[in-house]
Image: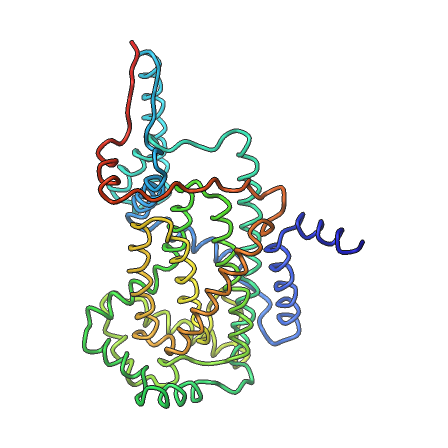
Length: 412
């Protein structure tokens, strides 16, 4: 009698809003009763998303990945347009006008976008159709709920991360001893030596490590192109669960990471041309030191030292899993994931043990999100179940289909 109303309320609110409210409430209590500064950078996650979109060639990447998702749907590009010439011209002019308006708006807002981005936006205006009228309000509600969940989880994660090193016994020496006992060497020094001897690899690692937010966004776009809204919500739920689980685990297993615990082998990080690792390391170190000494004025989103588990690896596992529905997307995601796993160790952010723990966190998040896939968001926000994907065509048939994209019948 009692469980049914509770279940009804749970489905009405959704698992992710409930979890985000719970962890945010716990974090708020910790924030209030500890020496952390009261000011917090609430809008930093939104600014980060804007910075991702503002990167050169990112709109082009969005369009390409969207088309990859569409290509996975057999017949998605076969269409018949029956119209007289006047109607056809009017439609083409409307599409061209929409593309021009999109390009002009983009040029005003994002100054670093390129000619390739402009071409991609014109292509998008020509081939992408908006949601049906009945779905627009649901999608708007989904965006609002997802944004609130994202902001709350980032806040809770930041509070936990800021408290990781406060009056704690660090695990770095234990991790190093464990890995030395298993491998007979100190793997973090082996990886540091690899980066020092191969500057090109170190530069690629630096690029990959700081592009995991764009990777997150592109996998989301891929699922949009795949016309799988429930699978996309399941994917975003798994990413959120990684943060929800990762913050407390940072606190349970406090650690600095190789480049802070044993900095000498990682001096080469200062020499990476145009690299982001060295300045970000200094920023994290300064934020953490300010908290530990009671001099911090602002609580910076994500901005503190922690290493166990590697949430970069956890998120990459999630992204790789949800990219598997297309051969092309999976191969691209696997290459990026492999480089990221190397990067977290070459750049000294994580020990191999952290990477293994990250794989376990990512797999657990996928399992939980899949199990609760029908109730991750409020009932009014969840889309209907996704239609089944058609079987993958053999590669020769796929190549043949690419040559026949679009069939156009014109009646005069």
